[in-house]
Amino acid sequence: MSQTVVRMEGIDKQFSGVQALKSCRFELRAGEVHALVGENGAGKSTMMKILTGVYQKDQGTIEYEGAEVQVPDTRAAQKLGICMIHQEMNLAPDLTVAQNIFIGKEPRKTFGLLLDDKAMNKQASILLKQMNLDIDPTTPVSKLTVAKQQMVEIVKAISYDSRVLIMDEPTAALSETEIEELFRMIRQLRQKGVGIVYISHRMAELKVITDRVTVMRDGSYIDTMPTADITVDRIISLMVGREIYQPAKPDRQSAERSETVLEVRGLTRKNVLKDVNFTLRKGEILGVAGLVGAGRTETARAIFGADPIDSGDIFVHGNKVRINGPHEAVKHGIGYLTEDRKHFGCLLDMDVKTNVALATLGKFRNRAGWMNDRRMAKVSNDVVGELKVKTPSIRQNVRYLSGGNQQKVIIGKWLTRDCDILIFDEPTRGIDIGAKSEIYKLLESLAASGKSIIMISSELPEILRLSHRIIVMCEGRITGELPNDEYATQQRIMTYATDRIG
Image 1 (tube, one colour):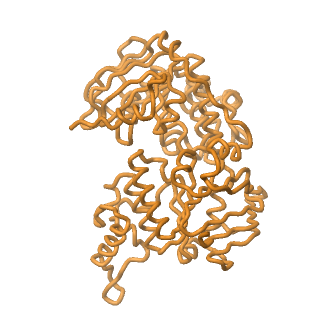
Image 2: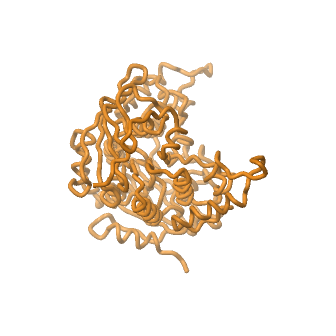
Image 3: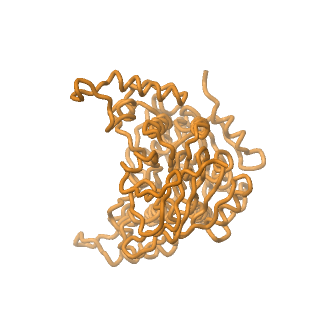
């Protein structure tokens, strides 16, 4: 059995009288990938922030390589060899790869007065080659793909001689190919004896890359098991403490008989979209699959008027329309739930009531032009009840809601506008398995009520689970269309998703 690198026992933590962690424990061995899973709010991030010195524990002990230690801040954690790679990467985009790797510890010359760029680039090149990465250390980080930026984050952590590496949702924004490259790096680190804490909502990944799984629920430790000895269904059951809803296969025939509510013909934008054509029917969930960079989000933004097009036509309920901006899309009954909900989907520092009313502010004004707060409150309370938004009140700032509840608030915004066509871009990204189940039920109920949904997702099981019909994109064009029946498989979708020209 490998040496235990980290042992946390009896960890308690309170925030303003709220018990976030209750006598929690966690153990990490050298050279293992240990999954830490649980719903949002289970305590995973709090545990890891205590380990990395962001928070201080109220009770309990932390042992590092067999000795009890105190971790007063992140710098102390880095000195011990404990680093965390956050879901939202912490890189300076205008600096080079080498400058990001050695930021705060740059090699110097001339009695320490000047930075030694030559030595820094050389040392960065050595680290990159050790991880078999073909990245020029002088390249500005802004020029790299998201996947390459993540690799740079890992190399940055390695530069501290880290023995413990914590990865928070490392594959959230990666394609299947990029995930394989990340897994290659993880296996290489495991061989070097680095212990890796792997936090992810993607259950299928756990069986591929992890050695053990620790489950947390409601701020408490539940269990630790070898990954090989437990099923994904069992992990989910331990996480949520209840049975997760399993939707039936979509009724493709009923959707096929429905009227066409949206038609896109020849949508083209230079170097981005190439002659995109598809239809959307009433009450249908149209899944849009493809790898990162395939043009899925760009198609959605073009339909919504957020990005210009060079040519192409859009028809809503059979009528040709011109959409020169999001406000015109909304007038035609189109709502767009962006993949980046925190920056573009909602106002984090405004309350639930205001966010629900954002798309329909005009209807809440009285004759004098003042906002009718009572009416806004009633509509918001109705939305919160209908969508089962977990919030102390409609006066709560959206920033303090979980990812799944933030997503429900954004959906509520478009339902208040009564949009017939809803575009969901990565609707479950970054939310836990229980919240995913609730979003799935919500999408199905919206379709059943006659709403038409375009659902963009990088998770193929999600596409297959919810869609009536599936279109696949690659390099800005539609390369395949599949009815969601026994013919539609992940393998067939990936075949179309990699159907590159030339």
